[in-house]
Length: 378
Ligand code: PMP
Ligand code: GLN
Image (cartoon, protein in one colour):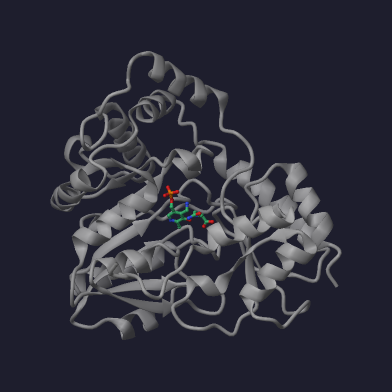
């Protein structure tokens, strides 16, 4: 068979989850909650199943769910997306990202990614025939706009933004988005904005969505995931919001990629998303987990990096070990009993750092048990 992704093996998330299971480690690697969603959401999907919502929905998603998303984006960011033409329900953010990339770029095009970058971007860019161009963040995980400018060429067609940022937990500032808007206009770029952690921004900061910035919204695919927002990562339902021309291009591919997305989940989500917005309180919920987890980590030799959003905490382990990140993550999983994700997997070039990522979307008891093990580190 033709190997279209010769440099790529199983994802780090599958590998570390498997290793954790084999060794009975507490899995703080792959990002998913170990607690269930709101029972009201389960009931809403159950009602949908029993109300006969079990056949194909309309290709772009059921109108009510698209209207709910439009209301969310209007209320949250002041941008009116047309639910009919500009919002499409997808099979998670992964499919939204994949399809947005396929319809935006092709052979000869370059796509800028800010590294560390989520692992699904590069394979999707390569499958589109385009070239990924990784631009490292600064040492403290801010976007290095001078480096972005230096990476732009006449072939640069798109840039992928991710805020709140996986794996660093940083959130982009208003200035970042203004700078991006100016660059994107100047160089006529499409922006693919991965906002799956949009409702997990801490300490009173605001999420900077492309939808807040009209010049950016006009050239962006805004992508999010109900899996993250409602603690149901296994449902794989997300959305993309984009101006009409971009949405039309997206749907052209979407109809032949998945055609449609799980009907009862769409009805259940739409029902559940009626007022008051069920994601209210989500930031506080995860901020409390972050604080408890950081307090526990402070009693270990691991050095905490900032966490302004997402449900990931990154640490520097150089006081414990000098082995490379993948080896350390494997050792931590098999010998200490806590699985983590090495940051090196989010870069296209080798890194000298000594950092791993933990997921704190876990029950208090899980986090306490993991901290107990990590506190044995010397
Ligand atoms: N983007 C980022 C930054 C992520 O962390 C994830 C992981 N969930 C995704 C996209 C994929 O989201 P989904 O599970 O909805 O496909
Ligand atoms: N997004 C999740 C993470 O960063 C993992 C999703 C996956 O397993 N591909 O951990």
